[in-house]
Image (cartoon, rainbow over all chains, first blue to last red):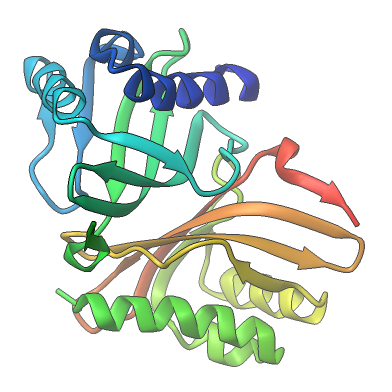
Length: 120
Length: 120
């Protein structure tokens, strides 16, 4: 099981990757067979779709502003509350991550609904 | 699928139930076969264990202070970031809920690790 520190460092690196506009550093956090469900309730992305999703998000200028501390768990999950700020739009989001033994992300699920989008 | 408004109202009622010291109103939000994993990584509670868990938490004086907006999803899930304040202790938590067609909670998973506990 990855340590709390390892998982929290990965979530912080995820935030930092967006801040630096470095999609590759975000994609590198994921295991090869990882799935991304963003937002929850839409089809899961896998493999090349995950990389494409993050390249597009970073290219679109998305920045993640943490809204409180990154949470670990008593297992191999971690979660964080944040606002995604994009040109002309903000979305309130909670991301939940699971990890494999090696500390790579095996899933990311993003909780936000249509009403979490605000303009400006 | 429950509406975003329905799910968010349930999460707010959950917070309010703790505020009022009303465990029954919290327990009434759950479907009969609901599971609670609090914290994530520990065994799931079911049935009478769920009711007992909430009776103990409310009796212990736990209050939930929201740390940002309640999030919906594009499915039947919702999530919220908060601090649990108990006598002598605070814990930073993210709760994720799933719902059935009737708008009852089918699962609650609480993301917090040992390091999310602070004294005072």
